Structure formats: structure tokens, C-alpha cells
Image 1: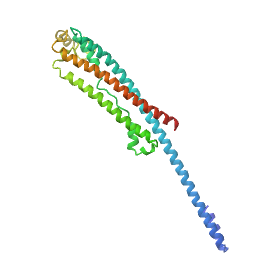
Image 2: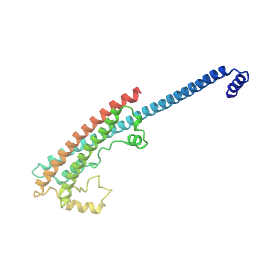
Image 3: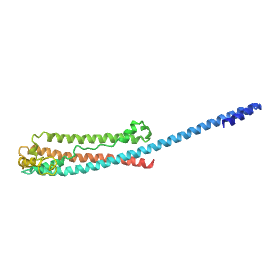
Image 4: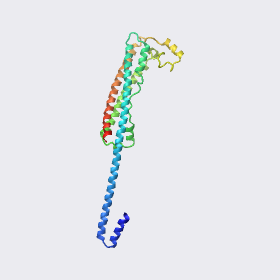
Length: 259
């Protein structure tokens, strides 16, 4: 094509058609400029299309992360509801005149079961977006702001949950004699054939008290109430976390679907 245009220009010059040559040269330049502009427009269109595709994929990946957060909250809520039930049973035992140490210990163990587990938001996609420098691809800045608020808010709720757990753990750790709490039940399936040998279990049956000593009951009563209250508070905090998750799910579901 270039050789073709060059030949035309040479013919014009050789025939003395200088005026036509300049007009043709200007027209050729204009065609080249138009061609460049069209190529740039096509390139920009392709880049925008790629960016839009990547933006939608990010919205959908973020949505998948939030769905995992929702499942995590459901599991944690189920666990804490079970702990609340055992907390009530534990308090009921300690309120009796003669508190059965074994029953109290069993309920206490389940009232704090997996209490160290707390909500951890899935931020894998968001951290990948930030670390790769692609945060500008998210055009809806309300989404970015909402995500920052989400992670900050849920982190605050999680810290409150962990703080309450540590308080209960510290209270239990301050008891000098765990045997008096009835935590060790030789006949419990949790221990049977897993931790204690037969001879140890037989000795435990003789050593374990049948009832919680009266001198530690008031202090233990306060600890039991604290565990029950903190389990209830944990459920409230998990409900707040779930509300944050649901809000983000609605925002991202709309973005993932409509983009």
C-alpha cells in the first residue's frame, strides 16, 4: 500500500503536477491521522472492555467471599446458641443448695467449647485488588468505602468477642483447684479411653468431689453468670456482624448481576 501511494506521488512530480501533489500529500496525511485515531479508539475500547470485565469479576469474587462470611456467621451462631443452652444449665446447677460437681463441670466445658473461635472476614480478594494496584478499576467508590467500613466494623466486633472470652478464661484460670469445679469426670466419654487410662479413671472416681465446696460457690457462681452473659453478648455481636455481611451481600450481588 505504501509503495502504491509512493508511486502515485512520483508520477505527479514527474508530470509537473505540483499542486495536485501537495493536495494529495495532505489528503494522505489526513488519512493516516484518521487511521491512527481509529486505531487508538479501538485500542481504548478494548482496554475499557477488559477493565469492565475485570471490574465485574472483582465484584463477583468479592461476593463469593461475602457468601463464605455468611456461612461462617451461621456456624458461629449455631455454636454460641448451644453454649448459651449449656450456660443456662450450668447456672441452674450452681444455684442449687448442693451443686453436683460433675454436672456443673460437663456444662461448663460445653459452655466454653470452641469459645476461642471467632469471626474472621474473608478479605482475600480485596487484599489482592489493593496489592495488585487495581483498586482504581472499582469505579463505584461507594463500594470501596463500604468494604473499608465493613472490615473495620467487623474487626471491632470480633475484638469485643475475643476480649470477653479472655475475661472468662482469666476468671477460670484463677481457680486454684480445678478438681473442685468438677471439670474432670472420669466417666465422661470425652475422657474415657482417650486421655485417662483405666487405673487413673478409677482413682479419679474416688478423688472427685460429689458436690462443689460451699466456700468457692459464690465466686464460681459469678464466673458462671459472666460466661452466660458473655455468650449472650457474643450472639448479639454475631447478629451485628451478620447485618454487616447482609448489607455487603446486597450491594455486591447487584453489582455482580448488573455489570
